[in-house]
Figure 1 (cartoon, one colour):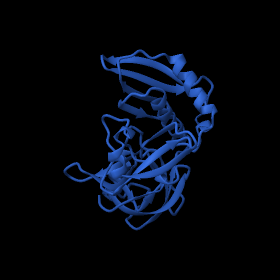
Figure 2: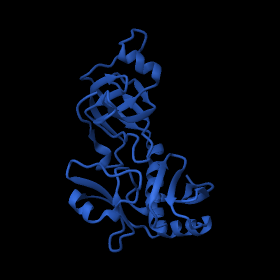
Figure 3: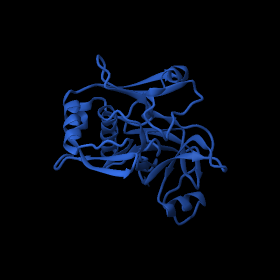
Figure 4: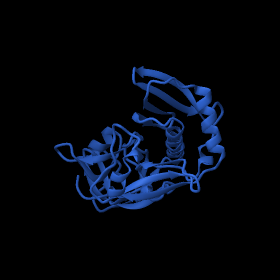
Length: 261
């Protein structure tokens, strides 16, 4: 795949659809010139949804990934992945597929909003957890059904104590804002990076940040994921499990409280 996809989700995580032009159809998926679909990365799962064709028919998208070169280097293209059989039919222009798609066609890219919003709530909550547990993170996963963070620490953690601390920050309705810092500013403040395993992408000179709180900063760190605009939108998320994964790792799993949507 080649070219660059304009990633609309980075400036507006609440945009659920957009019109776009097909730029590529390959084994990696369907490339678009612009998209609202978030690709797997930074621990957050890729979006699902559909591409609506000019005739109203829909191509279901089951995953979204970053494009790769033949030697495995990530590109700036975002790949929208249909079901494997349909992907093969589109790639080979198989006459048996009812979907006719070509480079240059206009489509509407539409995410599964309910699924995305769950991940936005979990992802923002994980940043609150980084504030509550001020330790480096050596692994994380953000899904529609749960989130987990692996903290580099030896001390014991308590589910009820962490859940209560999360509830207080959610109820305080702290604003969540997207910003940027320069690479030089990050170099001068390396503690802003909370992850031991993933470093912010460099090369553009600017690094995207997520800040929680204004008058009092609850959390500030580089992040490329999607987030809610206010902690109140996180809703009822609790710590469902704490595990000792190794001598130096404590895993905290977040889930929706019973009856919470």
